[in-house]
Image (cartoon, rainbow, N blue to C red; front, side, top):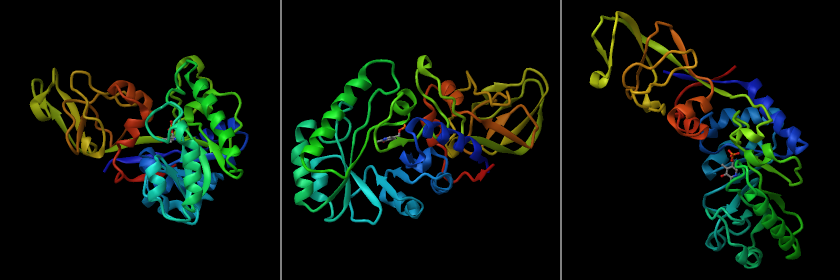
Length: 334
Ligand SMILES: *Cc1c(COP(=O)(O)O)cnc(C)c1O
């Protein structure tokens, strides 16, 4: 089977770059949702913990339960709210509060402009009062930015809204809550950081998705994707390869089949503009479910060592390329 290499040094480099921005690694919450963006939930949780990261963010309780012993706190972004030792739950709607289990630790998400999740600014006091009434423990208040990666004043406008939220939360008598709003783009972009926590995902995995105009922090991709040779054959001139025979050899050529396909989460793409591996080997013919063909006879090939490059080719973003990779692909730390 294809395999993934996780570069520990690069991961630590990225976390160090972010820690320079936050002032301390204690303020980093590593976002491990969706199998740590395809990098492997437990593996990345262990590495993050060994680096000294104390906080994590996931989507589901089930993910949190697999890693909660490694962190001081784990925040669950979207699941039924339960009472747990060190797991807190995001509240996205007023209904979430009424459904929550008494005694649960919660972090109130406030919608400051993205209009995806979170309670409205006009519902803030009601939400805070209901949280108290229901016997929930408010440990955090958060928001999410819709355009932190874009060169415009949008981010500052949302930040201003969140500053107002902080004041209103304090005015309602909640003193011991952590405030957090920054994602990777926001922390990579901003010069000053004065919140309690940054929720960092893509940046930790090595991708700076900011406009080039403010690209200053250099990050290194953590994941590389490799495939192993299954078989080799000599194509005669005029012979075709793969489903549909989309590729025809214009001369005699040596090709090999490798054990990676779209069933592994690799993008099937399109034969008119084939993907070229990081070792400069073009894909030949259509990608199959479990196999791909390259003009090579190497035992092992590196398919991708930078998901941003692959993303550009497939007209998507690094997030989608790595997150799509099947959780079954074996991983090794190098
Ligand atoms: C996914 C997510 C993040 C992390 O975003 P990145 O751009 O990967 O840093 C932060 N906060 C919330 C609420 C998220 O859903």
